[in-house]
Length: 132
Image (cartoon, rainbow, N blue to C red; front, side):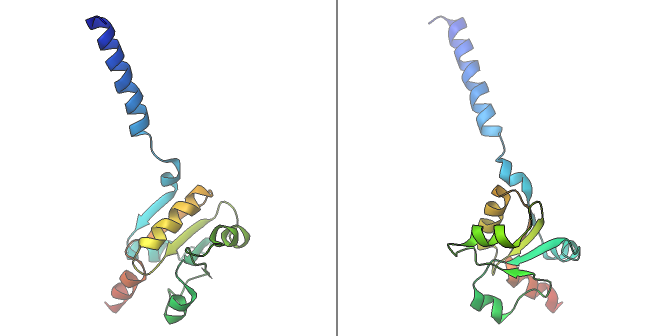
């Protein structure tokens, strides 16, 4: 291989990897991770569906007052229940205890076509915010 061919080959590889590496996951475009203040403001919109993705026990111990649904993201029927209970093209605001499970839920919901607001640091952050 001469220098011209090597350069062309290398340039092709760079372009190919750039296209793959820089491509955003389409589902991530539908998720916004927001702090408590913005979450509170956004859920005042009555068209936003607020979902607690924790277990029933955690939900019963305390939840955000505007919560519309409790659907455990760890449940085998999470996607089925979402599809049955939340209209297509809805904006869905999700939270869990600390923000880990809600990120999982946000990814799933986004892949299902929903616009998602994910409460950073979860219900714990909500409680702290409301102590002020």
